[in-house]
Length: 139
Image 1 (cartoon, one colour):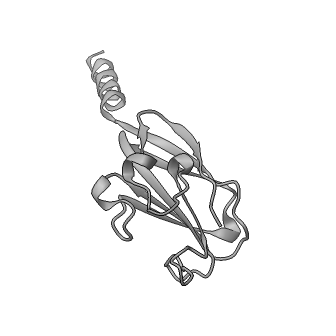
Image 2 (image 1 turned 45 degrees about the vertical axis):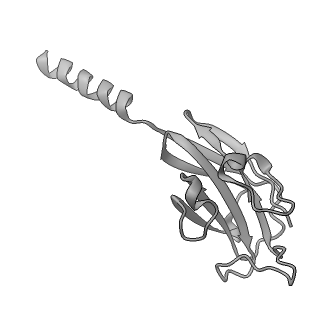
């Protein structure tokens, strides 16, 4: 009986103290199946949306992307998401001579930047339960 009580307490403690959630991201308008979809997850305002400073970076081959991806076991907290459809798989967001991206990009909360890159607070989502969001790419 003591063993059963101990197991119950251990399982309950794991449920209470495992403070993680799953985030499902739907991207409904990927233009083609070339290259990669890059999902950058940022947990700090100071690093958003700097390249190579993500909390987590996910690469998905565009030809295998179903339009939805789930990031599992993210700690509860505030995050901002930056997406890119890297059509030529060169790892950078290619831009025209005016600095406007030539490849698809998007941000959580579907923020559409006009003259400036959006801030972490503009794109912030509070992850405190499993949730789903939709981000439309801008081409």
